[in-house]
Length: 207
Image 1 (tube, rainbow, N blue to C red):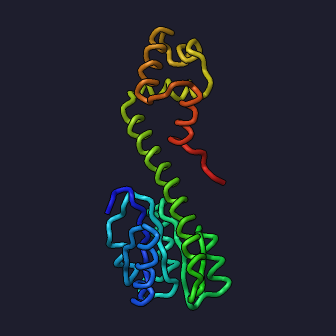
Image 2 (image 1 turned 60 degrees about the vertical axis):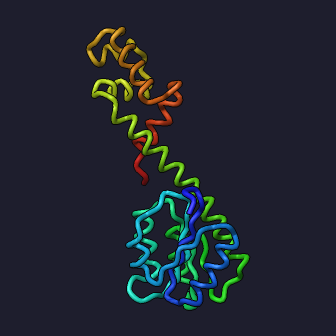
Image 3 (image 1 turned 90 degrees about the vertical axis):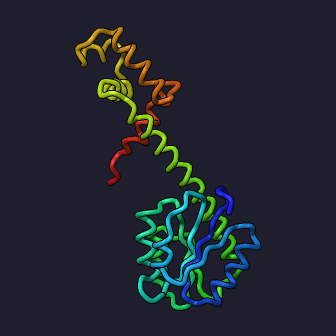
């Protein structure tokens, strides 16, 4: 499997469903991986490629909604598509509110499923890029000294070098030196870049 080839994971205890989906997924040029249970899927190490999960709602052991909760916590870049022969309105609403891309009743329309998978893989790719960017940012931030972090916070807050020098009790030349090193380590070309980086490093709490 190519490292960049999208993966479509299928979790369904019905072997006929797994086999039919495997053929459908492979014909679209994606890589299928099939599991008979949610636990078998969870035991498989996560992959850092665009991917999505097609999962049956009602299964022995961990059901689809429970699996959705675990995936949302551990694999944020992996959208979920539900397929079920036993769905109802409250359950489908719960799944969609929790972020499911689609909720399809068996027997489902093939085009509807493929459309949902394409949408899910696009979402996954975007989420994965964001995750990798945030990891790279944290790696850069980890190289900053305590003083450079203080300077970063004050620059992002809109302070001028002279004001930063006054707040930190150092001279302006020292501030310029710290600021220059901090900007290079963060790979920031401007204060605007730095502000965006800081927002990703320290996101505002959501109400």
